[in-house]
Length: 122
Image (cartoon, rainbow, N blue to C red; front, side):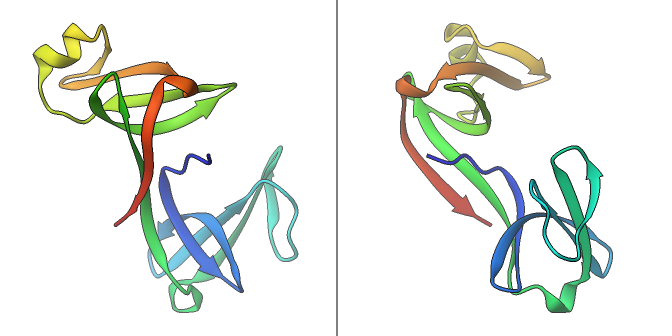
């Protein structure tokens, strides 16, 4: 299972992590690709006109954990960073989630405890 959360764009037959930049799109990769410049260790970037991008979309990964709905924000060594999306503070507090920000509850969940993982593109 690959967890994706953020913008993605198709360019020259490949899909890249992306971010909007006015009339352009910044494309990112973790390995060297012709035309990309190294921005940080294991991070290369290429800025292209929006008109050259095949699709540009925001991808969310949803799941169910402990019977409740969550969005998966990231992953690390068999753990998923999840954010409660049910909108009920008493439920989030009952699950023992961390209050990350006002009304925002998160936790680390074992990948093996998470069910119904699915992507949504908007």
